[in-house]
Image (cartoon, rainbow, N blue to C red; front, side):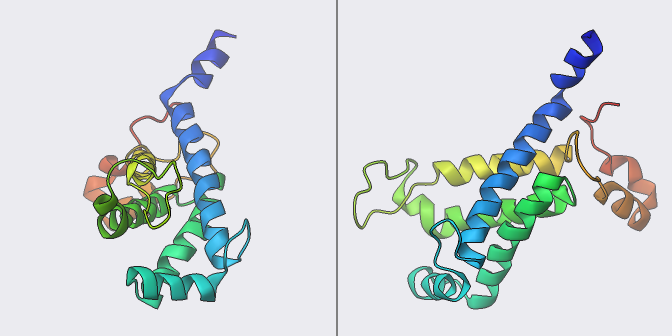
Length: 168
């Protein structure tokens, strides 16, 4: 009983919780952009909005949209979590710099027309993805393949790529 409680409250279980929640959030946002689900406009319309309204080129938009969509699924399953976590981290950093920092910190809670959203939400997603990049996928993951892949590419640094918070 005590070992079950210890495992359920371990840092790896916390990372698992963050990974799955971030995966659900990113999948939903990616599905809006890619598939037009959940009230989204779909791929072509959203690509046009990003190009005209924000100045993001179509190829970069596609990378961002598919990183959210497939990255969300991968995070939920715990596959290539660090890879997609890094992609989301970069995407949130760019979104903050390009769009949200000029608006300020707070979100537009009053839905004031013509005023965008602040960067607090993006900062939270950036922190969540950073945790996954640094700590790995946690428990209940299909696989943590990045340490093995990077360990083969850099055999003398293999120990540096293994997750620090994993418990057995």
